[in-house]
Image 1 (cartoon, helix red, strand yellow):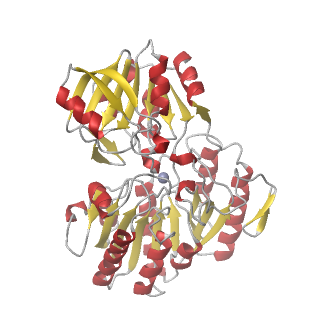
Image 2 (spheres, rainbow, N blue to C red):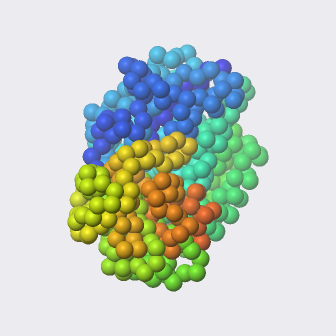
Image 3 (tube, helix red, strand yellow):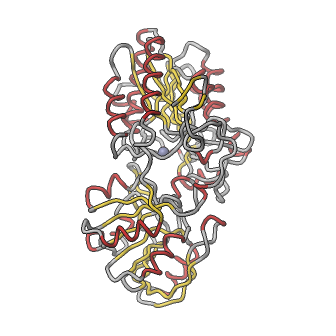
Length: 487
Ligand SMILES: [Zn+2]
């Protein structure tokens, strides 16, 4: 049995100052089937999914399609998006005949002139495969899933966990669903129920944890193959923004009923699942008096993993002005110029630096400081969803008890190696600020005392004018949305 597999991942932030072209994908991962460029990416864990090992474990032959992913940023330019789409579709045409098609898409990808890249791609794929071939897709739970997606995909499911530690499991589950469909000749359907809310929901906390566990426990029973709680991504700013429930199964009636029940239950928990955000002052006050050391403070507003620049200074300035009398660390701020200056000055040098605040208004003003260069590395890396990512030229700057990690390849903090490999021992810090919304949690939670989430200013908070209304928390229920009453 032969499966065609392709990956196209980009989380689009409409307010991001970072332009997005084919080169952005090349800098993360890009295999172009037409030329063979980047063919080494086949069989590598890419954003948490390795189609090669999944197919091999199941005895499936694999036909490789496009593999492309870029760090979250502004909408992809029209020509680059067209190229990526054409590469995917042309590689499918070349691969035919196949028995089934499995895709890994983000779901919140927007391009110039295309608000719903996932729906657009699935429609094009369907026009190649015909209506009979099983077609499925795995999404990031931050996708905004359109009606077009479930019109064309037989099986659509998202990761369940945030941090997204289950992509590989979900992609394997998709292959099993598609294989079953080929063998039985009975294709599943996917029911989508929109839930009129948008926000950040940590599955590491209750009651979100239990909601996910309860949904997962229903999979595999009564013709239900997969259930997904899709959180949505507000910064994409499209008409499809918002949460939804996806239920994939071979019993459409049962799937409809279950989707209704889960949508109502999720909405009813909306106040309890809100992210526990503190302002910068409150977060730092609480962190510095905490006895549960070290305390992580997540700089959720400037999270490069959501498409912001990563050179925001709001929380950094608050930390510097506090002049900590205990060890504290901040990482990573994206500033290739400052990293270059620190490298040229060399370890042990003291220099006056202007740090961050360059990419756009949301980044805040640059911070001027006198710092000692404590460590410089050209080849530091961190593990990101199963793959080592280069941090670029990276430096540790010391100002009194505060150590600041400056790097030159924009990305959020996933891994304690961002600090440890730069000479900053996690266990010795009292407070550590990380630029990340939640993905740090997987590897930091086991080794730190407490975790706080801080919000300041940035692209994440900009107005989202295309989001359908009413939508909680922009609007207060009771209200009518998506054809039903919500209270
Ligand atoms: Zn996500």
